[in-house]
Amino acid sequence: MHSHIWYWFMIFLMAVFVLIWTFQILFLQNFYESMKTDDIIHLADTMLTVYEKEGYEDIFTELAVENDMCIEVRDRYGRVVYSKDMMGINCVIHGLNNQTLDIIRLVKADGDGIIYGKQFNPQTRSNIMIYASVIGSADAPEGYLVLNTPLVPVTSTVDILKRQLLTITLMLIVLAFLISYVVSKRLSDPIVRITKDAEQLAHGRYDIQFKGGGYSEADRLAKTLTYASREINRVDSMQRDLIANASHDLRTPLTMLKAYAEMIRDLSGDNPVKRAEHLEVIIEETDRLTMLVNDILDLSKLENGTMTLDRSVFDMEARLTDIVERYRGLSAVSGYTFHLKTDGEAQVCCDAGKIERVICNLINNAMNYSGESKHIYITQSHTPEGIRISVRDEGPGMDQETLSRIFDKYYRSENYQRQIMGTGLGLSIVKAVLRLHDYAFGVESTVGVGSDFWFIIHPDSENET
Image (cartoon, rainbow, N blue to C red; front, side):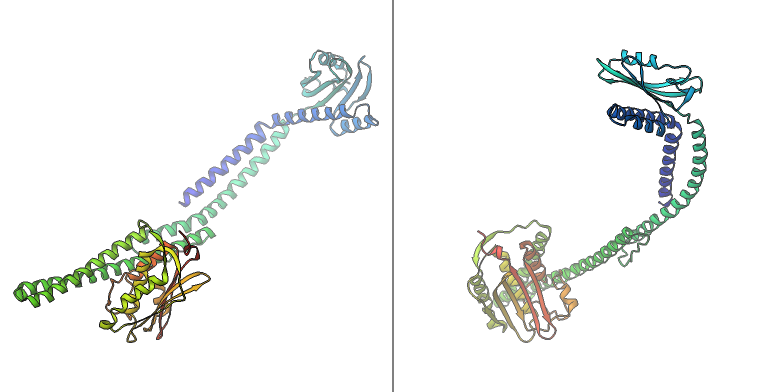
């Protein structure tokens, strides 16, 4: 890559030299003549503008001196009105071979009353520039303006420029060679290094620390790739954990299904009471498997954007009351106590089924981590941001590392216990549903005190129809 960059640097340098030599040497004469033509036309326009105004002779003289130009003005009868000679005998309008009258006749014959061009002067063996125009209109001229200026040969100038350009070109080639080599190496080395590290990343080495160096873009690319490698490593670890945990949660009910099916076959097939107990276990474990598969499928739909929202308007206070009453039915057998606190009716517009699932998942999670307290607190409150729903437990709480990962798929803290109910994907589904609604959510926790999971239904979702 370094050689390619250097190669293109040198191609660019050669192109610059070709342009310089082409325009400075080959086209110098043409440029010079074109410039002189434009200058003399512009000067003639200036003279015609100030002609016969007070002090025009001084202006003509000044222009003649500054531009090495001969000037002659004649009236319509051919008499000299103003004359300034800067070339002596070499001038075609003042010299021995005076051509002024011939030039005036050409002007009269021209429909526009203007002629200009270069003419070879045999006395000086060089070209001269001649310009002539009528004063006034071409139909009724008041006089004639004739200008004459030498076109200095640029051959000697071209020779001098050739020598200078040759010297400068050789110096610049050496200098450009060194600079392009250093610059190309400085540009390519970080990219080559990053490319080699990226190849290692592609082969599964996620602990690569990318290094830029050289310039800010390479440093930014290195930081981005380092961050990407860490995220890929984290996702890869999560994927391995997901597969391991999902395999464990699938294997446990499958083992129980097989065991109880064998018990029915071998032991309780003829005992109605035992057979009913064993069948009930099989049904419960089948339901657990179904729940796990459904949660995985639903989470996949939520994360890939194929699941849509079915919004409706309902009273969140009434919905919370109904949910908590259903959970209170578990109190007699599970020993959990559910406390509901609301601050009045709360009309919201969202997907009622999915939001109810979020609340149930948060309650299930609180039950799993409530510890010996077994008190679950569900709260609804009106805030400036919207309707805030929170579920709090009095369990062991979580540290900052656990808080940062608690919503990841299948992540379990050290305080995890076998779920009372649920599949281990509950909080991941909570996150996906709330993101689909674009609701704010989070968790606050203190070690030894408990955790408080919350989300806020935005005000613009409260009155939608």
